[in-house]
Amino acid sequence: MKKIFMVALLSLFGISNVFAGGFSGHADKTSIAEALKRPDDSYVTVEGNIVKKISSDKYLFKDASGSMTVEIDNEKWGNLDVSEKDILELSGEIEREFNSVHLDVDTVKKLNK
Image (cartoon, rainbow, N blue to C red; front, side, top):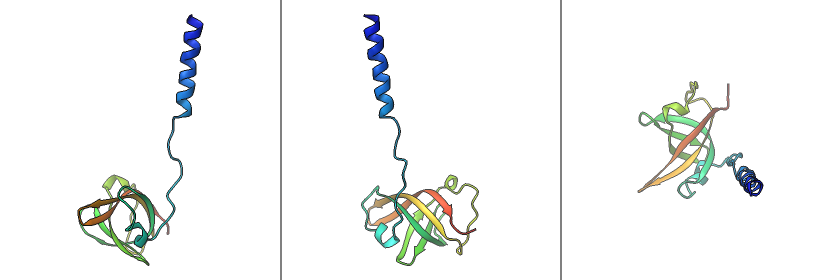
């Protein structure tokens, strides 16, 4: 009986490891114009420049197709120093609230050095 219990227990742990993990890919880059059309909580990656600081953690971000508000929490910056001239890659979730849409940024990459 103990052997059957141990085999069943080990099988259960083996099966649970098969289902462990998460998404390891990345979102394909999209234009701001296309990102603004995506539904709430869509994960997107956009490339462009910050052109204006709106508030402590909100910025106006622009590419050739348009502009949108992005929210970048202080801890997301890492050790990056950026200016309007820097090309950035931002990844995060589209947030739709009332009549506004913004990108809640998870990662910030500086593409030019």
